[in-house]
Amino acid sequence: MMSSLFTYTLRIADSSLILGQRMSEWCSKGPTLEEDIAMSNISLDMFGQANGFYQYAAQLDGLKSADELAFRRNEREFFNHQLVEQENGNFGNTIVRNFLHDTFNFLFYTQLANSKDETLSALAHKSLKEVKYHLRHSSNWLVRLGDGTKESNAKTQVALNELWMYTDEIFEMDTLDTELFNKGIAVDNSALKSDWDAMINNTLAKAKLIRPEDEYMATGGKKGLHTEYLGFILSEMQYLQRAYPNAKW
Amino acid sequence: MQSGNTKFVWELLNTVPDPEIPVISVVELGVIREVKFENNSYTISITPTYSGCPAVKTFMDDIKSCLLENSIDNFELKIVYAPAWTTKWMTDETKEKLRKYGIAPPSNIVICPQCNSKNTTLISEFGATACKSLFKCIDCLEPFEFFKCI
Image (cartoon, rainbow over all chains, first blue to last red; front, side):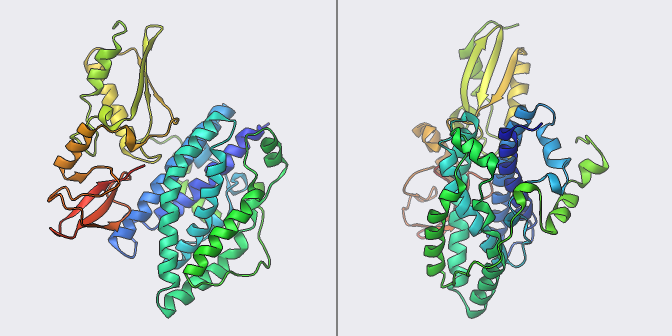
């Protein structure tokens, strides 16, 4: 039986790992050398944050190591937000996805830093310092692309319209979240929505982009339900440990 | 078996260079938080600079080798996350070493390490390592790295 705290920690780790993996796909393919370096740096930060949370989860669970948690679970056992598994697409898609998620992460870690759980609080403090850079990076680019050329504005607006449906589930609270929130351990994600809205609206206005209407909103990440992309990410990321279990070099 | 000479261990650690910036030691970098001697064993608490900094693994291996070379084998390296690492722990002396090495030290005003001009501009917030960003001097036109304040 998995403890609530274990599952809660795993969810945070999974979103960091999957976004880190997505960002690593940009390595050697960035639009400029500086951006290539920036995205690889962000990827490393995400992997580092994921590792901290996986180490803690492994310690709580006592059955699987951090590496086993990352490399030996299937799609249905991953609890990341569906937003982070979405394709890199063009540079605008990546920037919009990261901007939506970085804004959430900034608010989430700000609150998690007050957790009564000392380890979660310490990891949140640490992650927050890095997330501030990530958010500045994605926000600055969003404004440049949105308020750039006609074409960059159009592409970025399309990306925003397509990704919008994944922005609802990041604020969901299930019984596990509520249980841990009542103990002073977890964050009330639903309470982050108004600040998130304000930050998003502010940057979208600067970027001359139109906030999409809420229509069909996807859900399921917390239950292990994912879009088709996660399986492909895992098959590439986990290949080595699956083909050669316990391989070391 | 060594007796509990934590001062000696601190001195040894101060000889282990940062793998990316060899002019400063891991002690000067501020990642060594505590050296304790209990039950005949040293516990060395280390905090990572950035969560994903690949140098952490390298300097942990370097620390192990350094202690073993000095006949200290009764130790454990422990990763701690709180308080989170900050460049505020860097002394002025360490900052001066960075500057001489060609890296602008953490500061509110970014000063060119080549010509000391304050007339500098950001090229990219992300540099060759997680802890640095890229700047350019408007006066001498040289690009340089800036150690980010966190």
